[in-house]
Image 1 (cartoon, helix red, strand yellow):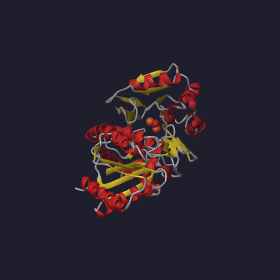
Image 2 (tube, helix red, strand yellow; image 1 turned 90 degrees about the horizontal axis):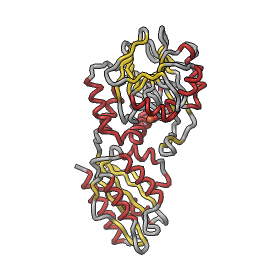
Image 3 (cartoon, helix red, strand yellow; image 1 turned 120 degrees about the vertical axis):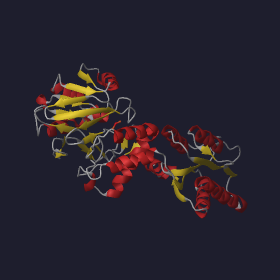
Image 4 (cartoon, protein in one colour; image 1 turned 45 degrees about the vertical axis):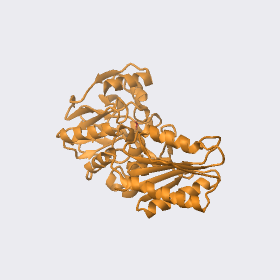
Length: 396
Ligand code: FEO
C-alpha cells in the first residue's frame, strides 16, 4: 500500500494490520484488525507525526521515502508513548540520529523509560506552536486520552486535527477515509473503541471536547492514529464521543451470565422475558460465547446491567469474575445493576457479584434473585417478576 494524501500538506504513511485479533494484552478483541497511522508533512522542513508499531517500521520508512529520504526528516511529533505509536522510533533514531522529537513532558519521561535513548527532545504544552517551513503545528495536551503523555497536534492552514488515540477505531480497510468504509461496522468499531479504551476517562474526554470546540480551531479533518480518517462531517465522531462520555443511557438492559449446567442460563432467559414484557430493550450474553469487547460497547448506553453466575466452590465462575474485573476498570457511572444465579448448597456467587457491582459505582438493585438447583414453576414466576421489577429501575 502506498502513502495517501490526507490534505494539501499531509500524507498518511502508516500501516494496516489486517490480521491482529488481540490488543492490549488480550483485553481488546480486534475482530476487524487495526491500523497504525502516522502522517508526513513534507516540504522545506519535513515533519512526521507519530510513528507506528515496531514491526511495521519498514512499511513506515518506505512510505516516507516516497516523499523524502529518512535522513532529511527534521522532526517527529510523538503524540503518545504507547508502543503501537512509538515502536518504530528507535529504528528511526538509528536511521536519523539527532532528529528533533517533540512531545509533552510526560512523553519525554515515558519514551526514556521505554527506549533508554538520548534524544534531541523538545517539550511542548497546550498553546505552544512550532513552524516547519510552510506548516505550523499547534499542540494541545490531552492527558489520559489515552495515557498521561497524550497530546493532540493541529495543522494550521489544512485544519487537520491529529488526536492520536482519540476518535480512532480498530478497523483495517483498504480505504483510508471514513466515507470509503462500510458505515455500520465502522461506527460499531468506533463505539467499541470508545467503550473499551476511553470509557474510564469520560470526564476528561468531555472536558477536552469542550476545550476543543471552544478553542475556535476550525477542524476540517480528524486524523486519528487508528482506523479511518474522518474527512466528511469530521465533527460527527466528536459529537458521538460527547454522547458516550456523557454516559447518556437508554431503557436497555444488558444481561451477562455464566452457567454450569443450564440453571443460571434459564434464569437469564426468564429475566430477559420479564424485562421485555415491561418494555425494556434487552441484550443477553453467555460470557463464554461472546466477544466481551462487543459486550462493553453494548453496555455503554444501557441503563441497566444484570449479571449472573452459578456458584462454584462458594464463588462465582471464572468467566464472570474476568468480565467483572474488566467492568470495574471502566469506571462507569449512573447505572442500575442486579445479580442472579443458581446454587447447590451454600451459594456465594450472587453475593460476590453484588460486591463487585457496588465497587463499579452502580446502584445495586435488591433483593437479588437466586434459586437452589433448577427453578420450579413458582420460582420461575418470581424470576419473571424480578426482571419486570428491574425494568422499573431503568425505564423512566
Ligand atoms: Fe493506540 Fe494508547 O495507544
